[in-house]
Structures are given as C-alpha cells and as structure tokens.
Length: 529
Image (cartoon, rainbow, N blue to C red; front, side, top):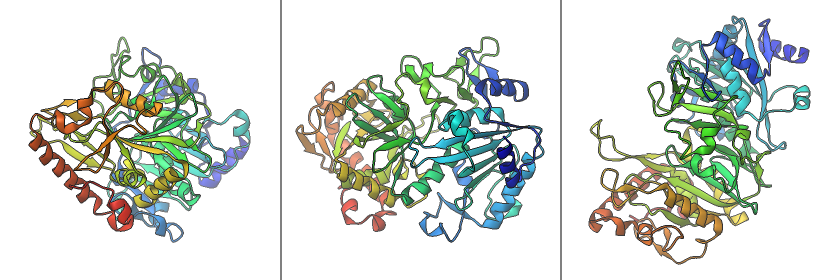
C-alpha cells in the first residue's frame, strides 16, 4: 500500500483516504450509503450514470504527438488535441479528485495473454465505477497485486466535474475524454457513463497491439468441443452477444479480442451487455448473470419489490449490465483460444436483400469488414418508413486508432495463413424491407451458425449472387431452401432487384473513402451493382 501511495503522489493524487482494490461487498456498501445505489431482487447493484447515459465518441480527443501522430487515423473518429491542453485537463481532473473525501483505486489487466496484457490503474470517485472496473478488467490474483508495480496505463475518472470548452477550441463541450498514448493516460471529464473507461482501455489496445503485429478486434468469440474458435463481428441489434453465448460451446468473450501468432485472447475480464428487452427465454445465460456482483446501469426497477423492468428504456436507450465472465456458466477461463476456424460478420439488413448466409473469400472478408454494414428498421412514428443504413468500419469505427485498411489487411493475412473461413450472415429481413417483409427467425440464424460449426456449408453447392457477387449456399440444415435465395422470397422480383441495386450503390458510396488505400483486390471484391 505504501508503494501505491507513493505512485499516486507522483501522479499528483494526495487524497488522505484511498481504498485500493476494494471487494464487491465493500463497494455495494459505499454505493448504497453515498451514491443512492440499490440492490435489485436478484442481488445486482442498480446505479445511475447521471445525465450521460451512453458513449460520447464526438468528445474523444487524442494528443497529436510526433511519436504516434503518423500512425493515427485522424478525422471524425480520432480528433486532435495538443499536449498543453491535455495537461490542463489532466490537472483539472487531478485537482477535482483531490477535493474528494475518498477515492477508489482499482488495478487490473487488459488482456488474458500475459505476453501482451496491459497493466491498468483506474482512479475514480464513485463506488459503482470501481465495481464496474473490477468486473471488466482481468482480475489479478493477490500475488499479482502484490507485484503489480507501476501501471502501463492510468485512467483519471473525474466524470462529475465538467471540462472547460474555454481552455481550447479543440474541446467541443463540457464532456471530454482525452488520451495520451505517450503518457499512457486517459482523462475523463463531464460524463459518469462507465463505458467510457472500458472504451478508453480498448482504444489504447487498438493503438498498441498493431505495433506488435497483433490484430485487435471488436467482436465476440466462442469455442467448440474440438477447440474450434469462432469470431462474431456485428453492430448493435445484430445478435453478436446472443449467438456468442451458445450453451453448446465455451464462451470466450462478448466484445473485445486480439489475434496473435499463437491464437486469440479476450481483452476483458467481464461483459458489458445491453439489458433492454432481456429475458430468461431468449438469453438465459445473460439473464441469470444479473446477480450479486453485477452492476446494473440505468435500469428501471420497482422501488418496493426491486424487480427490474427490462422493457423500460426511460432512463437510457440502452441500460447495461456489467458482470464477470465467470457469471456465464460455460465461460472459458483463462479466456484464450486457438486460431479462429470461422469468422462471422453479422448484419441486420432491414432492406431485406442480403442472403441469410454467404461464404466470403479473404478479399471479400476484408471488404465487408471495412464496410461494417447493418441497417435499422424505419421509424414509422417519426415518419421515416425507409430503413436507415449504418456503416461502421471494422464493426467498431469509433474505437479504431489506425486506418481501417490496416486492420482489414491484417485480418485477410491471418485468414490466409491459418485457413480461416469467413461468412456474412443476415439476421434482418426477408421477403421485403422492414414494414413489408418479416424478420428472419433467430432459430434459422442459429441453425446457420450450427451448420457453419459442423462444417456443413464449407463445400456445399452454392450460387453466385448477381448483385453482390457473394457465394450463397443452396442448402442449409434447419433452414427452408427458399429463404437462402432472397429474391425468391419477394412477391415482386423486380422490386427486389431495384432494392438490391440501391444497397450496392450504398456500399460503393461508403467504400469510396477507403478504396485508394484498400487497393484493387479488396475494392473489386465488393458488390457488382
């Protein structure tokens, strides 16, 4: 403890009362006493993140330093801040934290592979933040903590205190998340949303890992009885977490992984899962994980019974639950696996034109990986019936540091080297767009995933889709054959062709900003029109 105190003093933290690596029980007590926390009927700790109930990607800033600046994909995702402004914000956070009566310090690792893991220290004022970090980082043993030493990365979580936009024109609002790769520090001001700490760690890994020849990925992962690993990429509402928590397979992780020369490892020690519409019927593993030790952020519960209403999004669009990996019954701990046999890109195509499953060559995999496509159903109440397309590079653009092409090239190279198969799965609509067609039942999507794991689709007969150039299996166990060819499910084939052509044009328009860096092979692997 004396060593930790000296380390904190070297950072400018001089608060007299510091609780280092407290237990979940201690943090429950503090949250209830000091933060209006509550215990739900299943034993989870219900909390509120205040005004900010989601990630603030437009408020992220990275120090433009000569050592790293040339490696960073500058633009809307990674916006610049100068070192002087970073230091002013850092001092603002330190000064504020030093006014608190009590601070929490949590040490942990980012990454289950000891060869690549990052030692992370979080300094925060809220008990629920400390419990969140305890759950989400890889938890060191008592012996590991005793020998922890200096951290590689420090997060100053001072979210109750706002940033000052007058400090610099590069600070856009009173919320500011500032990162310095050279200092190994992240400063959080003006937001108490716990996910900012998680994504701050992931952003650091997305910078450091490619420098070591390691591919960092925003995906879930699981493993079969024969040691066959599957990666599942997908944006919100595509089924990434639901399909990863397959009771027939070992669960490696739900969100952040790295692919090394030895195999894959999970970056995190826990899950930060959306809890809206959660039910015991559809996601029993996640539902049962919400118990003592879990942080339930921005969920609505009954004051008397403490029963949670998972249908109520009045406090946040996406309430979340943060729990340790071990709360999933079939979790694999340590969370390591071999080289992936299958890579699955999940897309919820609300236009209803993509096939339920397609085989991808490595160049196609790179194209659809860079595109990161999904589409949300149209909002009739808001007057928008047309589905809304969404493209997020590498299925997680807001967390990338290097140019998306570099991650995509690393993915394609690893696929070729290790013989990984790639697949594009549509978990969206069939027979027409949302409002006209119908959502593909989850049972069929699960049947497709089971067939991939069984190898039933590896060499089966396939047809080439004339619009997208995709190799589409003509048969899949457990799936009606007519669903595999989307044009056949539409009552008006010509309407299908028109909608498919429009989606091809959307892909091409989105990819235009990457095609020079991507090169001809990847560009030519995209939709044909």
